Length: 213
Image (cartoon, rainbow, N blue to C red; front, side, top):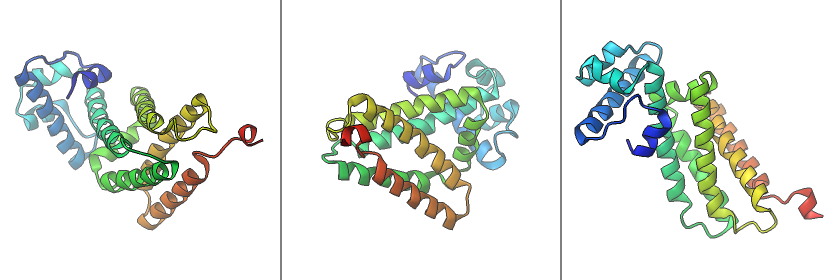
């Protein structure tokens, strides 16, 4: 876990030595295993300490409560998605190429997380937990920034502010669509994703009525 992630999730204490960072990673890995097996609500801090093979005091040293661990796992997933976006859009040269890669990312996102119980347990919490909701909004902003920087010069009919508003909106909605698809029956999920990709292709870079006039 990097320093930026530690700032975002608000650890009670930030590890500075390599051994402390490794212990933090052990705690998060153990938490992921427990959530995958039992779900978020069933995880107990004492059980987590045993699974991570660390003293219970070490768990509380970094995480004041279970919600803080869930936030840290959320950030791990968000960081992986942001890294995928950055890699996918580093060399985009046209709007058609950008749209193709958005659709590729949607498929990757769905395939990677549909059967991931940790992802489902953590991300579904964004609809109920205000701290997770805020982290999710910030995550959408970072993903939008990556996409916006890659395509801002490719859509001259859209002003910079309008382009950012669209990338921000679509970034956030993509996450919501994936989460809905992940808990839906497979055939319906595929149809929803196909419909969503058609909406993106038709509207993400479409000129506004004012610009088209």
